[in-house]
Image (tube, rainbow, N blue to C red):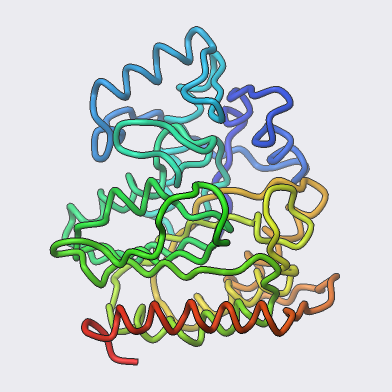
Length: 317
């Protein structure tokens, strides 16, 4: 898995906002990949009025909501982020993009996200007859993705996220209509460490395997790291190596796109450890494995048991 990056992502100028250009600049000198700005991809998920709203507000540098700001270069950067994610879905690579996407709904922006990069790439694959598992290990629920595929059985959405936390919506639903049983919202209590991540994977990976996806679309967010600024989870760098290695061992086709991760001192290690894991390469871990307090583990086990009870009519545990 190689990186797909282009300096156009820096043109989304958000100033001192937590989601700013330093998130990519902290990775040092990156090879620039050619990216075609293909606006036609946007309509796979988003409506024409919403697309035009993003374009118009970006040209004037107006915010899309209280958390999601724009600048003159934001629209093209967002189109490039979508195009890079679609390219990653073709090549099996990692789209190192901004703005991120998993909070964006069909009709409105949210949580720093303009267009839903992973949802667009996924819908394109679904249109080709593929079954897609979206594995979202960002520490926030990707509520945009959650809603976009809520009633579909051609996409399974599996999220590991802190609860309660932004986006502060009911996140224990397992889908609706044909999509019932195809949403796996795994709730992580504040204080969850590396041990709980492994427990979560042991609990729910069998369902993902039963789904028999053709492709794994990875919403790769790194804000569950113990020193991130926006959440209260306690993953170490070990967890990202572990996730990359596990995906490589359990699935054949996959691609990734960058979501959150806001501590620029630690973000490079998180990304590089994930890449080493998924590429089968050694990586020197610089942090100790983290363990959770007993009460945190008990809360996780309660949440996991409740989710299992909801999913048992549809999957075998």
